[in-house]
Image (cartoon, rainbow, N blue to C red):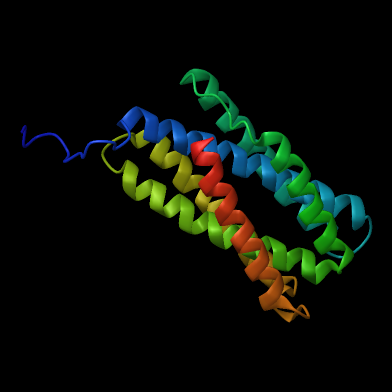
Length: 183
């Protein structure tokens, strides 16, 4: 056994496969988040949070464009589940917006907290492996944290049913991450 190589077990994914899975799921996540914001904006046409949601959606679009470039450059296919994330993301966005602006912001808190954990974990795995991708992910993580903080400032935690909404959205986000990494 070579002491310079990381310990691998039979069946462990190759490093390139692991990074491809990271890119696939990150692309899917930014795509799904874009659809969530689209659903929210289609319902919340007027309100004090609409401009903030638009700005967050613009950030998601920039992230999505960067991941689309990375997928092409590294020859990684997107998840086959993207049509599902389109429908599910839009439905979650619209449904939470129908419950009100604060509920839409509670959805943002939940998604961004899961993505914060996810990006932090990826950055740890990439330390020393792929510095450019690691820096991109850490930069996007900073945006996600800012979105969460903005959603809190807009009253997300004051939403009736906050714990229920955030638990549901977090569970769905974690399932989507797990599935998109693999498919």
